[in-house]
Length: 104
Image 1 (cartoon, rainbow, N blue to C red):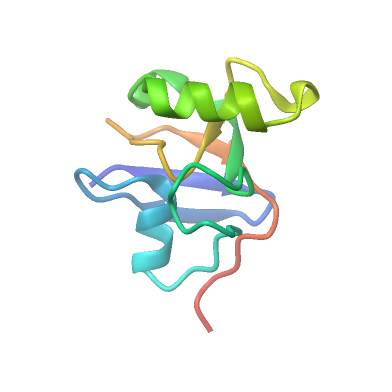
Image 2 (cartoon, one colour):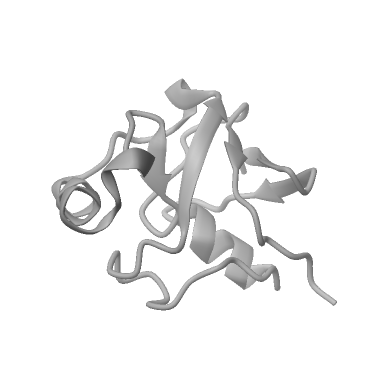
């Protein structure tokens, strides 16, 4: 399984096949900020890719449309993605996401 690194928490997280980054975190007991629990609606789960952008699937139409219509323009960039839609294809992905907490 691919492993991603999450800053600023210094967390390494295994992402399973056909799992989004957020789904993987929730499965492993991490707290990942959200309000809609994977519906690409609340925009709270957005991440900034810091490195390893080639280790992810490209965004789908649903994700792109959601970000264009609901994410503030100042947060949008080619390196901004929704963790509830972000699928990993290999090791090396580093993302920035504040508020991620390990299992208790």
